[in-house]
Length: 116
Length: 112
Image (cartoon, rainbow over all chains, first blue to last red):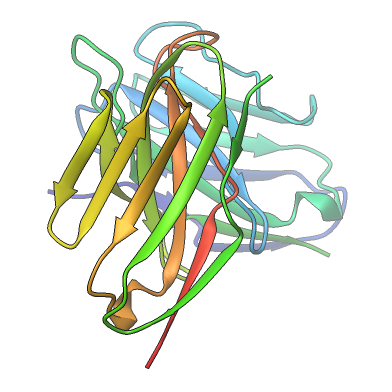
């Protein structure tokens, strides 16, 4: 079946502009995660949606970052008033949680964001 | 707080064996996962340990000692295609059920 998809694959924006990044998880996956990865670095957790529960927003670096997940499926990560330090690859992942936490996350190809 | 430590880089020749260690300090530990990421690619799941001991999956094995807060990934019969970054990740149960906390990654370089 189809994997996790993300769009756009690349985004170049000017400092101060808003951007929206989209994630389509694997159909039926109840959990969805957003991560940020700077060049040569590890994965920085941003936000986590689990079913109908309130999202875990503990990783969002500032109030310029927000995310929503509509209908338990597609998610959008929005960055307002972008700054140069926001430049990174934004990765989305989904997992199937049935009766217990899932240790296996399926990642999308990422969106490379460049803020000029 | 939460922290995971793993070496930044390991270099080995084709056919060799490489061990990537991961030590962690987290609350609400549930298990340890390992992911592989090739340059420019997405991370992909390799293995998971919830209980102490060794899990073997082909050329790759993963080990966990909960009492020592320590695990490792063993790559055997190294191939050029194994050149990638490898991340350990703790599955946590506190703060947020089912959240993975990733280490900074280990770059494995395989030489001919």
